[in-house]
Amino acid sequence: MQYEAILAPLDGFADSWRDFVAGGGKGGNVTVPFKEQAYQLAEVLSARAQQAGAVNTLYLNAQGQLCGDNTDGLGLVADLTRLGISLAGCTVLLLGAGGASRGVIGPLLDAGVTYLVVANRTVSKAQAIAANFDSRVQACSLQAIPKQTYRLLINATSSGLAGERPDIDIKHLNGCQLAYDMVYGAEPTAFMQWAKQHGVPQQADGLGMLLSQAAAAFNIWRGVTPDIEPVLAMLKLQLKA
Ligand code: ATR
Image 1: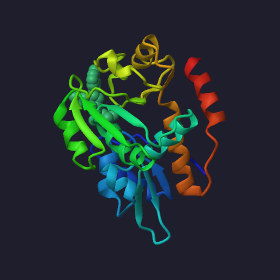
Image 2: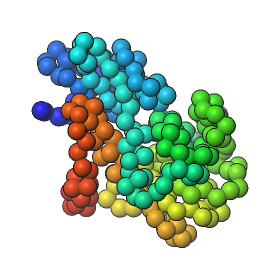
Image 3: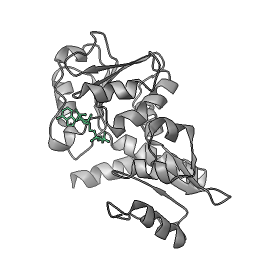
């Protein structure tokens, strides 16, 4: 098995995929900015991909049809479980309303989350996402987050890439067990550092989610789920080097 990165041109995702299959390719992961185009290209979509509106895993089935799945949400749920968070009955504050946010809400609800607030700088984007779900999911701006205890805070904004964090009041950290940032890097993100300073017991970045979504994709292709722990330890060392 060979697994390598292919840099597709911005206007040539479908052609790149076709070339890959013509060269013997059987399956692949898709990342930004092509997850929506992969969704369009797939002939068969999993329920998870339909709910996310995006595909991160492609494969050819026995009939040669192109199938699209999405393992991002599974990856997050697996990583939260690894970190000791019990999602049954959990209340969640999810910051951000881009592709990263949309893909994880369904799997979080399926894992037992009872109440989830999507808060975004641009409130209309949060409202558009919440409209796809039932009343367990509420939308608001970063300034109008409902006052209530959120056991889990997830930063799904891209603010960490610029060394920033979403501008929310510290009162929303009261009672929070874990502050999770989907972004990762060599150092704790600004969001993680802020949560730590204000007494949140646990902080984590998105490296475990990245590995868990990859492990779930590997399972789709090969029927076995690799253990992420040794890979996580290796990658952490590499990031620090
Ligand atoms: P992705 O697919 O990775 O989620 P995206 O679709 O570009 O990327 O979405 C980025 C998200 O990060 C958006 O929710 C964005 O907020 P807006 O919708 O208001 O643009 C959010 N974001 C980026 N930088 C931010 C910052 N500094 N503070 C708060 N939110 C930020």
